[in-house]
Image 1 (cartoon, rainbow, N blue to C red):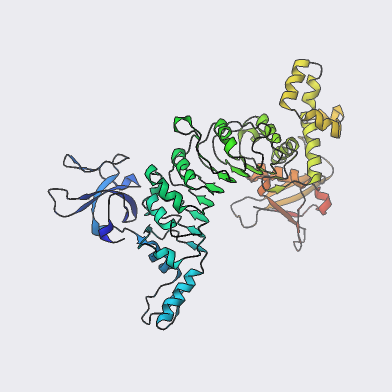
Image 2: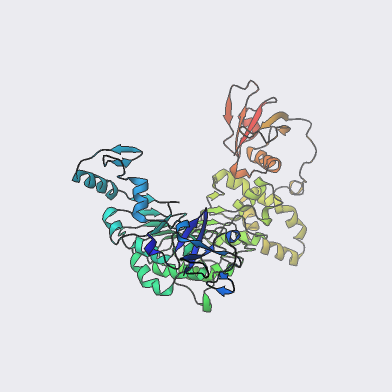
Length: 517
């Protein structure tokens, strides 16, 4: 950026610190021009915008401001300067083009034609961490990159505002995907810029705004400006509520298929429910690592939802899981690392979730086979069978049980009730005297993990073994990859079927089980 284009609101870099310029002018009794900067990292600041009792600007964070000389700061580069730096430049002595680290020597007008043709073929450009701060001369981008569809401006901390984004996007007539993650100047969306943004985003379908500090109200303005939007990612923005100012419902593009709100601060499921009428075409909803204590889905809600991610929330009751069965279109679920599953071994939690949700085909990225579903449903009956037996003679207790386990009787109709003795059987806590195999467990490539010598029942399934290893090594069962070496150490065999018993793979005493993740 040229010095003449410095203005209040510009972003700058000084000695490794990024900031926003809030003041340009004299600061008596010193001479010359000073820049008043509020730093992203408050520890870089010295005051809040005042000097000798005079307030020149105000900082949002107390003590995060200071004055610096213009010559001390870097103000970034134009969009095409960044493109030339990364994708081709003409700075060698003979005037050749630098492409892929090699100089291509061209003559006369061929130089320009070749360089432009190389850029004109680009459909994807990544200027991540290239310190782009302005669009540059009007139409320069449109002329050089007429076919660009996917643009990554992730980590462009000198990008000052949405007006600059609009200036860039308006020149890309085929722009389909735009990544603006970690661009801290984009937290505020001026209402008077809406018309310009709408004209710039006519073709945009995918937008990334992760870690930009944007609120739900400002995001709602952006959604209004992108009518064809199909996917929006707004992770780690400290969004605590999805309610619009004035309790109005924000406009959401009718074609939105993916909404990613991972790692925010949402704690009220009703916020999601309020948006449901506007999300009829939503296929993927990502709510990982929020603060939701419970969820409830009614029948016909989210009619096209196929994938739901709820891991890392505060869900603590099984009815939250049971309600997901009311969405028959949902095939994929991610649910782990929540209080509900804290006391359940990995294999047990997986069995219970699968039994409750007859429509899902994938749980925590692991496919569910027909055989696993049968085993899960039978496990569910046995798991709650004793409780059912205890309340059968008490109508009120029976009613409460069926309210909590609405699928129990249906599963009993399908599989029948096990023997009462089997349902009341306590988990085995003493070592079996017979049918045990002595194995070692090692974690290749992870020297910090201790080896383990263990006696295991030959009839133990791989899934149950994963549950044991989860408790020992704190590795989720869905992330484990198991194999074993025979006692001679010359043959490694994959344990690739969770439902098979160890003796199916011919594991014997003296063999070594290898755990990778």
